[in-house]
Image (cartoon, rainbow, N blue to C red; front, side, top):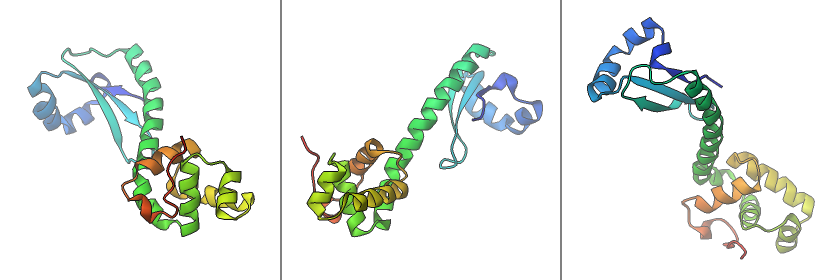
Length: 166
């Protein structure tokens, strides 16, 4: 994970290359220090969150350390939300049976309940569910449920039309 960096710690050659940005967007608006919290992950390319301050040298080593801790959490959350938004595209790559298993798992059915409902074995449910998680880029059933329930496509296009259990 990249380390958070403030304007005070940028090399002079970088500051010279970014002079237009600094003058146009920061200094012009009374911002004289900026601490960037990088968000890690190849799913985003280069991304970060900037903290702005009106005083030059406002951010110190403690702020950088706190920003690094925050970056770890934000990167994980961003990775999760990016996965959530990919579901709309990923569901197209699922077979009809995988969609059914994914929808039932997202509706909080157990593997055994899914197997009974779809007349397949628990091992087959596990195989389909593993493929669904991989395709949608979710790490667990909780992420799958959140991602599946936020997708844009109407429920009728995804197999069983099952709603989450109460």
